[in-house]
Length: 215
Image (cartoon, rainbow, N blue to C red; front, side, top):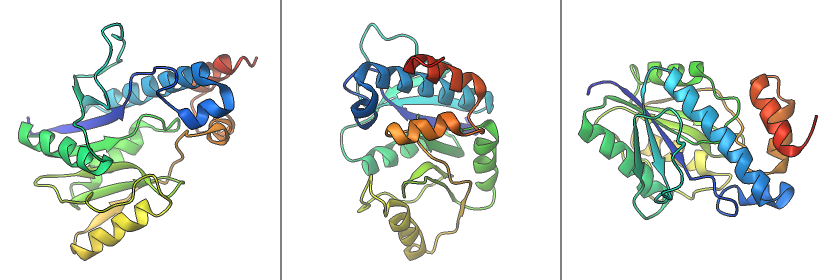
């Protein structure tokens, strides 16, 4: 293929199975609806970047779920830690011949095409690119072939996840670049911040407010 690929890590938006921390604030049904909107935004943005888009699901989707948005391929992640699943996502893409691969989450409301383009451009100069998240992790990681084993022995969903990854890159004497730090939507505070953030697209804000029952 020898092109650019964006892999979106996501889930089918089933109440009770997605955004459980957000559900504690707004209820499982609304949390799933919020997640569905964020997933659609992520997939649309990835598609608009001009890259091939792969939706990588944590579980096998139900037969009833057919609205996955603008994607070129849907796959199911292997079982295992987040680190092993990230490693496999890159391995699969490199086997397919992609030479610029970016993996992102599916819940960042301020994600733009420019963010993805900046990450892809960075991979022309360095083998790894990271998009730091405000919670201490990262919302984006990109690599070019052959790829590095960045993900072993990392503590995931922890305030030091990004710091540990930086340390690992330094220990491997690998060069990397970091792009803009963004905020995911994990809980009620994150959702309120997204609604108030002028960087969140207005149509997305309106859809989120509609879910919450606001005018």
